[in-house]
Amino acid sequence: MSLEDWTAREPDDLEAVAAEARRWADSAADSPLYRLFALSIAEDPDMLAVLARIPGVPPMNLLLGSVKLHLSAGDPLAAWYPHLAPRPLAPSREAYLALRSHVLETADAVVAQASGRRTQTNETGRAAVLLPWVAAFAGDEPVHAIDVGASAGLNLGLDRFSYRYTWEGGATTLGRGAPTLECEWRGDGPPLSALPMLASRTGIDIHPVDAADPDQAAWLEALVWPEHQDRLERLRAAIETRRDIDVAMIAGDAAQVLAEVEAGLPPGPLVIWHTVALYQAPPEVQERIDAAVVGIARHRRVLRLGMEPVRGLPDVQVRVGPSFDAARTVATAHAHGRWVEPAYP
Ligand SMILES: C[S@@+](CC[C@H](N)C(=O)[O-])C[C@H]1O[C@@H](n2cnc3c(N)ncnc32)[C@H](O)[C@@H]1O
Image 1 (cartoon, rainbow, N blue to C red):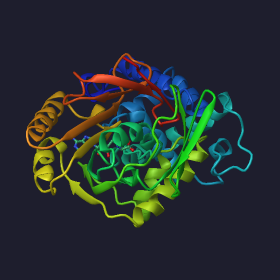
Image 2: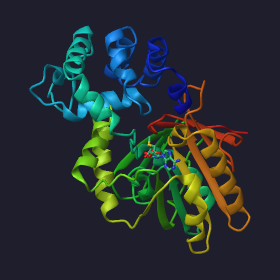
Image 3: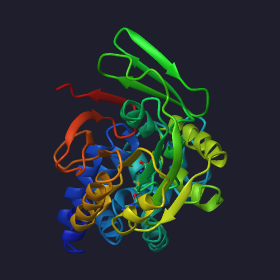
Image 4: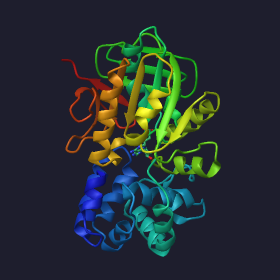
């Protein structure tokens, strides 16, 4: 769901909220628990009314993230959450009823919590999707990197992580750091032969996350879907790696600060990437970012690499070009980087 979908509807239009909940369920295909929750909420006017009170996008992430953030082992709902239950129960109607009671009994607190948060999931698995294109662009030369919508800037450790790509009939490993990212490359392998070198790392975010702050790190963890313990582990490992690397985090709307940030970098090639971030930005912001990239390309060798959901397409699109909307799709990918399918010309 895009920002426009959410802001375009009337607050009390529960049919529209239900349609959004169903769309969201499609994107949660690899979390059976959340998919069940979203589909059940879509049929439940009381829960839709709670969801409709959450102003941020996507409200389902904010609702379920807020529930997960404050869930304790003693809560009946905890039985379905692997981080709290050693042997979690399989998703069922009972699980939904436990969520329903939990949310309706604490609706004001859950809405207040969800309204004060943003969807800022920082998913390092996406680095495995970016890496082949960053490496091809960089070659042997160090490149500056700007991550637009960087959240906590974890993906700026892209050259410090370890990778294991597998493809039909082959596998390769690169790097020695943590986390290790496993990615299925659905093309001819290997996708790259050496890690790129980053000359500098800059994250731009309208609301940067400080992963060294326990409350903010807890929210990053709460945004990880319950069954995805592997993602939780790599998030924690990436936070550790982040402590050892020098990242300049810039607070601001990328539309306003991108050109200025680039102007402050030393000479050298530049990669500007954004992953599952600009779907949150209205069209005028995206146009201003496009214009900034075009301006930068006049005086610097630059690669703009976007990995974003696109309305009507089931998988995330990886695109290279000055404007994401007009750019060439070079691959489709799993939203958390579990696989990449290159698009051969
Ligand atoms: C869902 S998170 C994804 C974070 C990270 N790119 C990743 O893939 O792990 C989207 C991030 O984009 C940021 N964001 C959205 N619009 C932005 C804008 N106009 N300028 C800068 N950051 C923005 C949000 O604050 C949020 O941290």
